[in-house]
Image 1: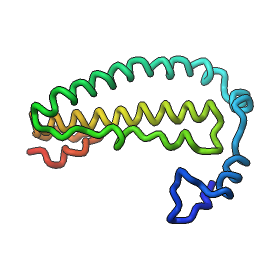
Image 2: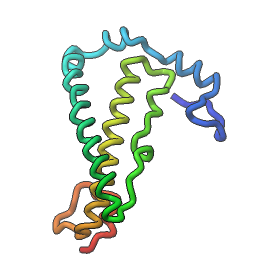
Image 3: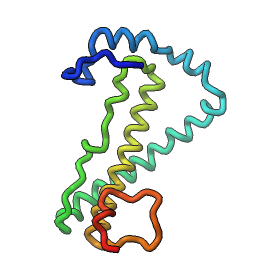
Length: 146
């Protein structure tokens, strides 16, 4: 789908034409469920049950950063840079899809934020590169010593 917004327009304030186009592509939650495989529906509670451990990890990491980062002089990671909930506002998503977007935005943003918190901690305590190549290096790894 192409957006019909002007370049200077806020992406969260789509034009009337864009809203009409989005609503034309919207599929009801009932139709969405009917088109979804049964095993996907049955596995969904397991996916959403994971929100509880994620909330616990979120609280733990926030407390860690709140207490420890000022002691070490490490700049805090800003939540708003990682937890972005804009996709749930898309007009073409039904309720099920919006909940999924909000959940994925939270979990993926949280994990990215935790990675940055861990990267800053590692840079403070042990900025030494691994002997083996990493599949995915964090944002600060390039500054580490060989």
